[in-house]
Image (cartoon, rainbow, N blue to C red; front, side):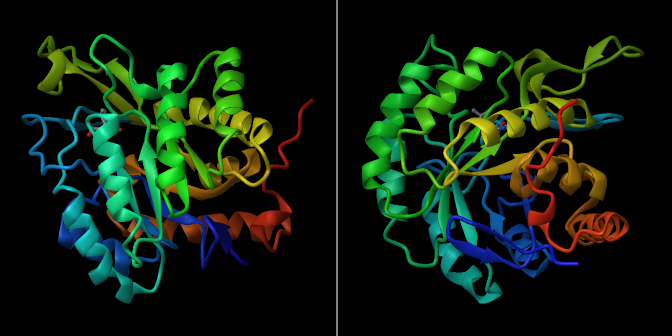
Amino acid sequence: MNLSTELGGYKLSNCFMNASGPLCTTEKELNDLGKSSAGLFISKSATEQEREGNPSPRYVDTPWGSINSMGLPNKGYLFYAEQARQLAKYKKPFFISVSGMSLEENVKMIQHLSQIDEISAIELNLSCPNLPGKPQTAYDFTQTEIVLEKIMPLCSKPLGVKLPPYFDIIHFHQMAEILNQYPLRFVTCINSIGNALVIDSDKEEVVIKPKDGFGGIGGDYIKPTALANVRQFYTLLKKDIDVVGCGGIRSGVDAFEHILCGASVVQLGTILMQEGVSAFDRIAQELQEIMQKKGYQNLLDFKGKLKSL
Ligand code: YRO
């Protein structure tokens, strides 16, 4: 059974990577990902300046997944650029996620990161803060186009965008129409479902401290929404833009479903927080067992081939 795939022009030994966010902020965490069986790995979203992020508790596991309002804690983009040089020894692609506090900040970071050979590709987090009084960039279609128009020409690395979930068919079409205008290499679907509220009924209290308890949810809650977004963008995007699936993958079956919907690569988020990097081995093993039972040798035997009734 062969789990190999390609993304951003790189050949990958298998289709698993971390989602940007969990266990990819510090030098130790990045080295653990380098040593893991993941086929590639990515950093926490970087800003120009180092950030401490929000006060704790800011990530909590729940029976069906997780909620977080981390507030972009990261060591600053120059740290991840330096890490890229060190991490090259692991001989697998290393992507940097970028999430500037403004368009100018994204421009500055991407121009600099483009010059560093050891960085394989950039994932631009379109959930990045936008103009005050406006929704996040990816929910502001006009601003999304302004951002891509500015950034695409000055990014000389393979570039992908990380999208939040969409819930309306017209929004899938509007976003795909914008993305199809640019030489993007991949689109990652989905970020956490934003501004959810998990509460503790015994204590009659919220479970995370920032934002009166509101935060992005991941895990089991979001798999159907993630699959819908992977499927829609796989169907609507030009065939040279790959889809990366993220959301609710904690077993081989979940990974199989994302690939069936069209994902070329799949990311582990909440399960990576809960289980650590051994999750890559377990889930890859489970996916291979499913493929064996079904008589599939390669991911291309079933990628995108979801049937309708
Ligand atoms: O709180 C975060 O750092 C965070 N958490 C997520 O689940 N997704 C994200 O993209 C981010 C960083 C971006 C933002 C939510 C702080 C604007």
